[in-house]
Image 1 (cartoon, rainbow, N blue to C red):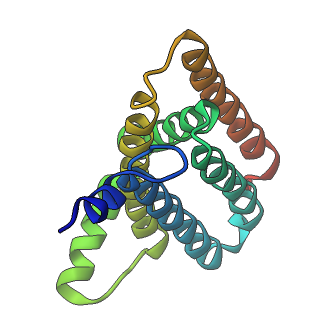
Image 2: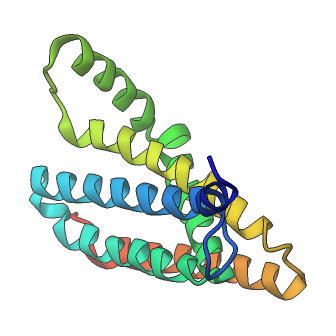
Length: 169
């Protein structure tokens, strides 16, 4: 492989951010949004909440494409909070993992919404890793760290607001 071909796989032209990071963010956001869509199809009462939640991921994609610390922070905070909730509080991650293995063995899915939680959580792990790497490769100073944390806190506040306003009761 030529040096030029190798460099094009490792770095993007515009920002210097490695391609694997950009691709991983795109894949993580895309898979999560597909899981939101699937869940909204299966549970119609979640459609408004999931539409409002999808706005977060569009913003994350747009901001991280510009290497914006606000976007990296929003991604890491929302993905960590969402995964933490599903791993340690609702345990839907574990239940979804069991459903995934049952699907692999039998081809049957008894609770597709819970299976989508597992898939969405995997997408979030990819998003956490790629956004932390993308942010840390910028060698952030205090201002960038403040923006990272601010983006994270803002997205958590937005998520709490949309849950309050749009979650089915």
